Image 1 (cartoon, rainbow, N blue to C red):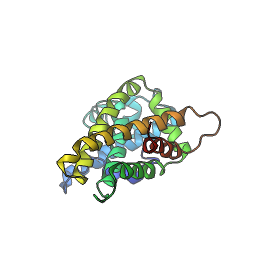
Image 2 (cartoon, one colour; image 1 turned 90 degrees about the horizontal axis):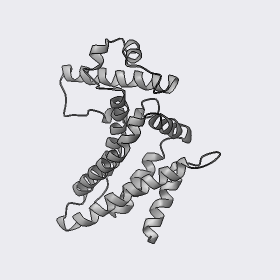
Image 3 (tube, rainbow, N blue to C red; image 1 turned 180 degrees about the vertical axis):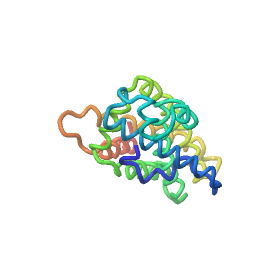
Length: 207
């Protein structure tokens, strides 16, 4: 969410030098998403209506649907921006690096940007919507495909494809395991990045 993901906002809807009209459209879309995010955090996801968002963004309900199809789409907007930022960092990695180590370092650095309080707020928000929870499984599959594509752009030799697909699969799995373990903590939560490092250590040592 923009409240604590301002560093990734430029990754949303990025394109090659959009014209003035397109830039205004993207800016409006981002503004609506930021307003909605603030309402979600203040009132809760379920308690925030589309009319609330439209009023706070100073637009009509009809105009809202020109930019988003639903409240869920606003959450997905920020989720996609977060993923885009992670993949952009991965694309900067040297092809001389080991793929699994590179993904680990990028993922740990990325998740380490957020405090435990911020991570908890996002987790609570995502879990407050049954429709969003239902889409999580599909998102993990999409993330695996996108990660594999980014890996192939860095490590271009065709003979590495099988290995890179495996790296994408186990890396997403490590992230899922780390977040689940982090979520199940009792008392004061430790940083999610610590659990992610431990998950990759398990991979390196062998299952």
